[in-house]
Image (tube, rainbow, N blue to C red; front, top):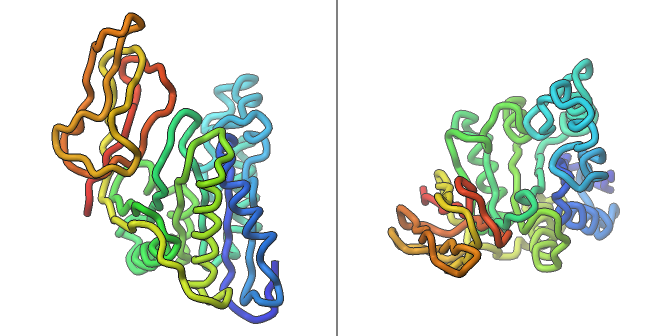
Length: 295
């Protein structure tokens, strides 16, 4: 969508994983609401970045992976940018998105949810500090978006060199990602929060008139600690998403099918509860929560 006045180009994408349904509604609602006559610059809105995965409502294009699992590795398009037009199906999709749309953007935002059975408090993830001023600009825009938590990590998947926001930073564009809600669901509250956040971003970039709405806690984290269960059974959470936890605080128990408590899971350090699993059953070794480590 081209605006009536000159300005930056903003790329907003969702459903790069096929079970990230909330992002589809967030991006499409914002795109429908923007009046081109009031817009400065260009809005590139892609509600579904991976249609093959969406068709299966799975993280990956499941039909291709089942048919030819070795040939389809890597299968996660999010970690294959800038893509390869001579590669497998996933790499080709990434290359088309990058070359024809993402590479045109001054600012890039990628909307995610955790996989089905997990829920995140609204949080943004930034390019690593090694990207310099671009990373700091991304943090400012993530604050304008209004995330509760902002991950400023130096290692891990969220700063992988082949993710869209890190690739964008490598060419001097500002990129960040957002995790919001639960995979496999369409949630009114998460969608509304995302719409308000993207509207804030458009205002902060001076692409739309208005004032940025104060939104979110905007707590910066340097990492997130995964908590895993040692026993399988039924999971019973004892803390709520977003709670500030004390070191040693129990956050969940695992019970046997006969109701016996076989494990109590506690956080090893203080920090906010950023992610929880929502499935009632767990297997030994499964991640049940993530606790943030403030910067």
